[in-house]
Length: 114
Image (tube, rainbow, N blue to C red):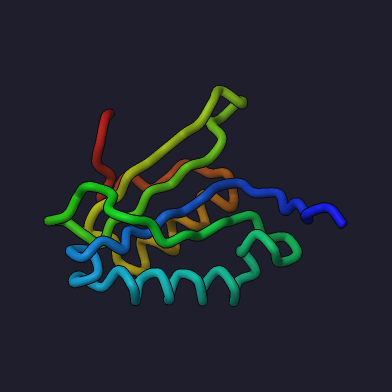
């Protein structure tokens, strides 16, 4: 039996490095996972399109919890990525909703190249 394919609009990674964990990233991941489940946004739910993964260090150790997003760029022009520092649950939920709706990502707390 072949593996089942689930369409995905994007992938959210929540840092679980020691500095981010000290700032609550484990709780953020759990709260975000519960939100994706409750709102049927998780990739394996009917209508869901988001994947959520715990990651190793994302490099903004003094500004955690950190979250990274990967999704297809508008008009299929490659891969879009966004990096966030000091993420709380309301921001994580807004990021997830934007990815699910294929809407512009929130600019709040983004870091990295402009």
